[in-house]
Every structure is written in C-alpha cells, then in structure tokens.
Length: 265
Image (cartoon, rainbow, N blue to C red; front, side, top):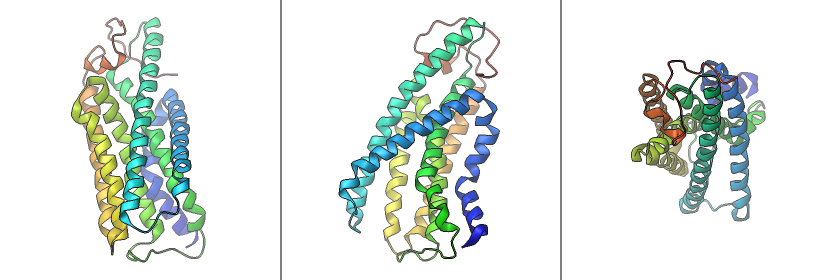
C-alpha cells in the first residue's frame, strides 16, 4: 500500500491518542510516568490473556467460540482494572501526603489527571498490541480484505476499531475510578458494560458486510465514553479541594487551603 497508506492508517488509529497526550498528559511530568507504568501493566495483562488462550487457538470460525473468548478476556481485564484502582488509591494518598507537607492539597482535577494517566496507558497498550504491530504490513505493496467484508480493508477496520477501543479504555478508566471513589453504581457498572458490548459487537464482523455496521458502533461507544469522561471533568473542575472529589483519599486527614497543586513534578 506504500508509505502514504502507512501514515494515513497510523494517524487514523493513533492520531487522537497523540493529541490527547500532547494537550493533556504531557502537561504534567508525573502523569507521563504513570502512563508509562500503566502501559507496562496493561501489556503484561494482555500478554497473560494471550498465553492463557494460547492452548485454544486457532479458534473455529464460529461466533460462539469467539464470544466465549471475548467474555473471558473482558472479565480478566476488568479484574485487572480493579487492581489498578488500588494502585491509583495508593498513588493519590502518597501524593496527598507530599502535597500537605508543602502546604498544599490535591484538587479533584488533579485526581482526575492521575486517573487519566492510568487510563491513557491502557489505551496506548491496546493500540500497540492490536494495531501498531500491523503497521509494517501496511507499508508493503499489497492490502488485505476479508471475505465477509470487502467494503473496507482489514487495515482500515483495525485502525478504526483500535481508535474506538483506545478512546473507550482511556476515558472509561476515569469514569470507573470516579465511580468507585464516590460509590456511584452507574459509573462503576457502565464502563465494564460498554467494554463488553464493544467487544461482542466485533463478532459481527463474521457476518456478510458486518464491518460496515460494527466499526461505527465501536466508534460510537468510544465517543460516549469520551463524553461521559468530559462531563465528569467539567463537574469536578468546578469543585474546590476538600469537595466530594476527595472521597478517593478514603479518610486521609487533610487541611483546607485555597492553593492547589499545579503539577506533580
């Protein structure tokens, strides 16, 4: 397909992630470090899932077998996200102690930044694992189409699907962590439900011209997650330190102050 197609697919699949990194994550050096740590964590989880299902491959070309595999993978990823939330709690509590010693306190926006760093790491690892590894093939002179859907190339389907899941993982982590912190059932159950729905939707690619329907739906779910995350950020951005956004600290003793932490470095 050549280098034009290579960069075109690359920007479609990863461009929005690069924009999020440039405008949000890169502004705080500590969040960059959290993103790197989270990426390593999620790559380890994905490798564990791959090893776990290695004995069952290749799967038959039947939707039922793929649905079972997707259910297992989603459950493992959600359990890993709960573990990551525990790490998130520890990180926030440690940063709160450091901030207090300097006469400051974490704002709800700071806590959301930390959650976004963990979520961005999952989005990056998903992109690396499922899409970036295909880029060398895109640079060749040929392309790949699957029999069930010849309306879009396999590479374009992968790029758009990766974009949807990357947005979903990045933004739903913020929603999920906020839900656990404030014990809001919808925000706790919504992200896993969207993840499971988006994953099962991809099974529709086995049907005739299935990718024409599944790709827009996955992208739509990713956009819903992004909108939900934006709503929470706007909601918490208007709160002062000491508001409900600090519930995540779970009882840490903090003193009221008008000064907020401008960065973690």
